Length: 343
Length: 140
Image (cartoon, rainbow over all chains, first blue to last red; front, top):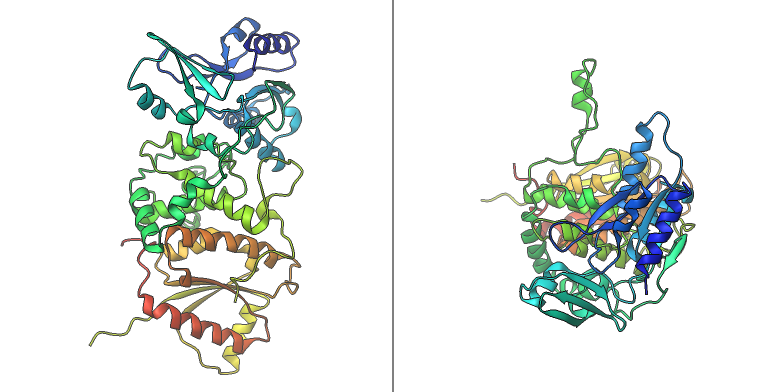
């Protein structure tokens, strides 16, 4: 089990010794069940840190922001950033390492194990408890969660309220870490691509109808892009806001700037946006499921990324997020790659 | 009488093999359907998936990617990268629900003018019964 007191004292120790400039972790929020990410700079603040099944966020996202922040500073603090990291976050970090976006020395990883379970899906929990107020959720001993409500403690098997992605998790412990709290043990998961069967069993026209209905809803708020630890490009194909228009920019230069797709949220443009995002995440997406969680319109974005993850595995035997030394999917090839589709 | 549907095919041809192959077909006066819009790219490996999506978005009824045979790439391994990437794009397009016939990839060398004409003929023949591609097309 993760001993929270040990975690806190470790956090205090590294802050006191000045090993890290700050620690990114989870803390109880004043409102709602889900915690908030915190940036702890002082030793005494480390008591805020928590680790429980409500810690759903992928904190690796903040590492990309940190890199950008450092690039703007005149004399950036070169010390590493402490990061409380769970299984899926650590796989995201491995991809960042693999792409040499960050160096291993830029981060100090405080690994926490998901205790053979994972994190909760808030909606599943509300449904299960029929709207009862939840005060606290803890990891149980036997792949269950212990939930404290005003009426007393309830034990629920983890599989009933786990987030969808956790049901298909490949490693619910950090694959890289400097210190690890909890065990490196894995919950027996169902087949990793089971949820896809629902869509794959449909005919082409039904699939089209499904995706058309889903992507038609998209309002292009780009929450999926903002929350994704892999979407760290300085300039995204969907918006050209980084294209500096100055007094010297000629009309021709502006005209030459390629506009790949319209910003208006109509189905055809949404398709291009989501397909480009899926392709850009092929072999990089580690299925943290954050895009789907933040989507205000409940578009099942995981099914897009998950499908390409499955194809990468089946066609090329590629699995992202485990080996920082492995060349990335589309930047490598094998002689025996399938080419039966080429005529 | 309604006119017969003539598909528009956008073909991304690599400069060193497929483009030369289509050129050979031209200078040899081989006959093939005029439905294809050839775009010469430096290598099949330089075709971004976005080009493909964008072509469909702007109203292409079919997209063809063509490059050198494996081992013949001018840049040694560009077509190997393409093979991987295009395989994923093809899978994704099928997953979304686009007809698989609308997107294809082929290897055409500079000497294969006949193969090029045959590919275009087959492609046009397969797409015609499907009618215009409206799924990804931008509504003007």
